[in-house]
Amino acid sequence: MRGSLFSHQKRSGAAPAVNLPRGLRKGEAIIMKFGIRTLDEVNVSGKTVLCRIDINQPVDMETGTLKSTTRIQACVPTIRELSDKGAKVVLMAHQGSDIEYQNFYTTEPHSKVLSELLGKEVQFIPDVCGPAAIEKIKSLKDGEILLLDNVRFMSEEQTLFEKKLRLTHEEMAKTIVVRKLAPLGDLYLNDAFAAAHRDQPTLSGFEQVLPSMMGRLFEKEYVVLSELMEAPARPCTFVLGGAKIADAFLMMESVLSAGAADHILAGGVVANILLIAKGEQIGQGSYDFIVKSNYEEFFEKAKVLLEKYADKIVLPVDLAWTEGDVRKEAKIGEIPAEIGSTDIGEETAKMYQKYILESKTVFVNGPMGIFEAELTELGTKMVWDALGDTEAFTVVGGGDSITATTKYGKTDKISYICTGGGALIRFLTGEELPVVKALRHGSQIPIKD
Ligand code: 3PG
Image 1 (cartoon, rainbow, N blue to C red):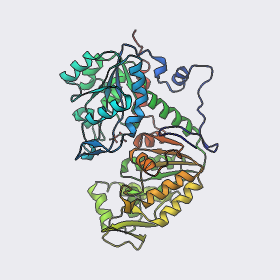
Image 2 (image 1 turned 90 degrees about the vertical axis):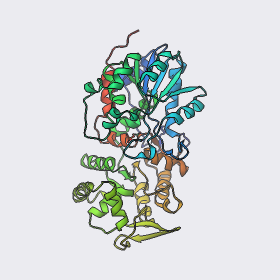
Image 3 (image 1 turned 120 degrees about the vertical axis):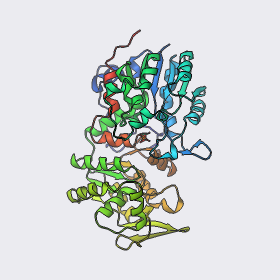
């Protein structure tokens, strides 16, 4: 089986059929089934299109370069189509957040990568909605592309990020970014499926005031995943790792309570929280990391889940850590008191491989440990090997998981690679994503000629 990143491939009869109403053009069929306009339904020529994309990538803060460009590549078809059709294209995007300052950065490097990928200049302005950005947008000619700076440099966008402040979508239309930029746009397009679970002004505010549509990437992700979730083949296994704990617990709670998961295979920090909640001693370093990251609140949630779904949640039977340049492993129950684990152990990885090989559908979000380092990549590598070998329909989502897929040469072997991590998780919970709700609203606003 051959394929490219972000392709949707059918394997072993387990793949979803894309089941749109018949006898209609594709765009009409999609709007009828999902209530969201696509680019097929809109004439963008000569129009100013405000586009929210997700090009959030890991950044090397010392050199100011991007460590990966996969999400940027995934946005290219929409941007190219808009520009080729003569739209004035204004791109809005975030890069990292102040929750993890490691990747909180300007979007300037992204404009250079986009220019190279498109073979056409993507202008950049270090402003989001101030006078400089407004003047620049007004001066754009048909086909020209402008990328604004990181929208999360504005406090309005940031305070609505995982914080207590909540605005309704109507209230978001009153935020400064929407009030300043919406009058300059004829249309709003959202291609940021990877951020569709976030409720922020640039994601859900413009749809209140501008005729809206989804871009090609959003269309593909949303339609494929919707069809897949209608009836995933069983057994259905979820592999959950990484460090975005709120996302992982939300996913566990909802897929278990909905009866959608036959097995949850836990790795990374998620597994450590579950093990501690179960009363296992897994080393002071592992515990300290959880406390330092303010994840203690999840111990209680973990206990509840373990009590209710003991037969579905599969936990590591051994863990790994490093001492100098040596990898060490020990069974649960024999872990040295002071260590901080950085990977699942080999026995666990073998056990997880067996589950994956025996499943019919597998969703993966997050690596099993620090897979960037040679000594602690074994667990992630072995899990990805099994993902490559299984006959199951495999869905991998999120930045780190995509990076692991590329690193282990499995791009052609995974059935569907989704740009979204958190968004995929929220989507699988069956909840309507905030951006989907907003796009449905914006798709009802008539387009003026
Ligand atoms: C992601 O990286 O999952 C998306 O870009 C959303 O980013 P966020 O988790 O910082 O909102």
